[in-house]
Image 1 (cartoon, rainbow, N blue to C red):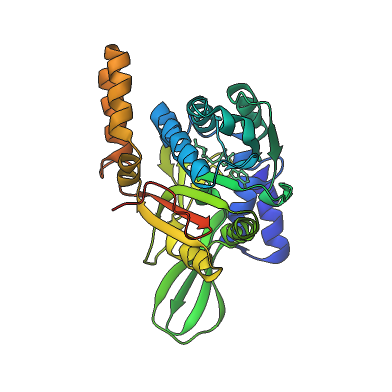
Image 2 (cartoon, rainbow, N blue to C red; image 1 turned 90 degrees about the vertical axis):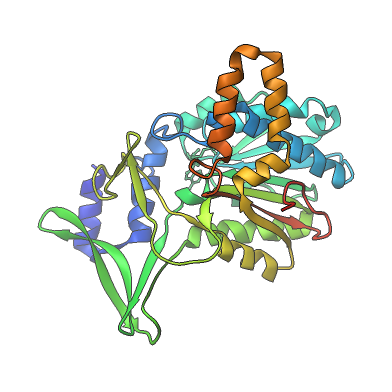
Length: 344
Ligand code: SAH
């Protein structure tokens, strides 16, 4: 069905930019992958699904930041793309050691997937949880914010540009007979070195919203994702039932992602006068905020779980696994109030 919709749009308007193609494939209200597939825990695994330690450590990180903020009476906790709600459930279990924080929390979840929303309703036990389709829907207030996004930005539609021989092209999806194919659509003359790069307008929109709120309300944003700080190239990839596949096969049934350009997000935040720490490797960040100690405690409490806890530590921190490719960056205001975890 989604393929029919894409065909019709291409026949009517010409090739679709990669951005529009991803928008339809991932977010079409009826047939988009993120509207219809649970994804996380099935087609792919994320850090909170690897181990409870991930969400717990972020909970401890948040307690520390809440205290740095002077223990405000109300605090808005936002999670973008909470998946099965695992991170938030582990996070909230730890915040029980700080009853005043638990009372202060107003939780806002940004999620477009109705099935995952139901799972979140089951797993997240807190009196104040509100769901939104978009971050813009979260009401503005004077309460400080803590915003968390794990593997959210990589799921947003991304444009891909190519400059060759002083001509600028955009990567697009067209039709060859009945089959979908990638093409380079010429845009204009553009003098410069040959180069390929990506831009993610949806991420910029979300970041602009976050920076405006943080400047007004104070607080910190913690972004964890796979990506790079400098560099270029294209990174679109598809995962169908857990296996790498072509982005043009299984449209609406495969997860499409791109690497996050942390360098650009950092520049945007700095240009608005916010503090920025990172991007730092996920392995280093988790160790800085107490992964080894937490692992020892879990093993001590339940010696039968030693092997699985050790395996999770390796998966979260080693460079052959998630340790280096995954990065952590924090954007915060005021810039003097530095969140924990970024000591190098
Ligand atoms: N943070 C979770 C899930 C990551 S998968 C974890 O670490 O396990 C991406 C999540 O973002 C899913 O919950 C998906 O449904 C949601 N999502 C994807 N695109 C979205 C969008 N445009 N707006 C809101 N949520 C979105």
